[in-house]
Length: 238
Ligand code: CA
Image (cartoon, rainbow, N blue to C red; front, side, top):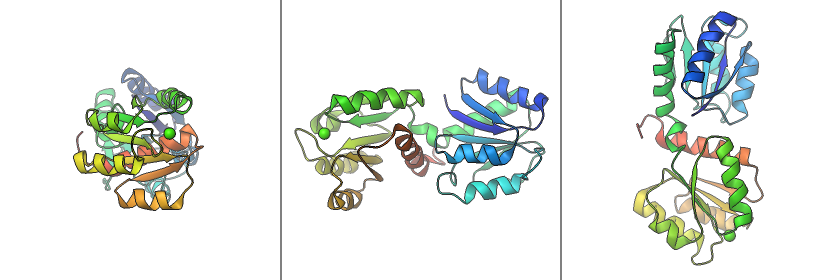
């Protein structure tokens, strides 16, 4: 399941896309104008943008430019429905038939952030933080396995992405980060109550991919997870 934003001008074309996305089990929002759709994607939680090649207002090229202009959207895959346009580095074209659209959407998602969706490991000893986080991420379709200690994190099966609390009961989180990275080269997002600049710098030097200081919103974390997932797995089939 992914979260897809789409822009279609006519109800007939919109209907084809909605039926296809529904059948594939995706969550979606369909807009009638491109600027609103791009703004929704920029909110940070969409996995994919579908643009009707015939939409009024912004041209497909302008939509791609608008997506490229912001870090939050620059690496989100774009599927363009006919007429077929020349593909860019992450733009793929498809005809607007259910079969063609479904195949193209699945391939675009597999090459992007969808790769981490079911394989996130949360390392957090505090139930009061972990439990709402697990519930919150589930609402975005992200399933999390959780452990409470550094030792359990190092013994866990390899994940596609690790959310790592730095304040753990048994080991220094930075040491866990170092060992996780050397064992599996897995992307790591550090979570910490300590607003300590030194931790952040050391963690990033150890190979952590990003850093969030508590308290943070689930939405903010989802945006980071997707960005790190895309950077790590874009172009790879997971
Ligand atoms: Ca802790």
